[in-house]
Length: 134
Ligand code: CO
Image (cartoon, rainbow, N blue to C red):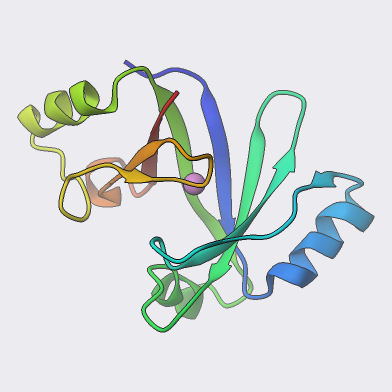
């Protein structure tokens, strides 16, 4: 069911500062910031030869990453995104195993304009999982 790792996401308290670190200290190619109000985050993507890193900061009052940053004030690894061919089939299969899909269970449009879902970290060894249909 799982394809490639699409990206690994790191929550940061200050996106502009994180961009400077990745661009200047690590010498990476970083995209322009993108606001995702439906997800309560602003993101950039760091292009790597074999994958991407997503840097995200809270956007708006009820950002889903605000509590995470309160516990991890300097930032931290937030989620890993796996590619799937058919997100609805993947969701249905996961729900038969008892895994919890976050939100209303309906895929939302992610940062790449593709359908995404998030899976409860307690069901996956403490790791928040994003599925993205490719
Ligand atoms: Co993501």
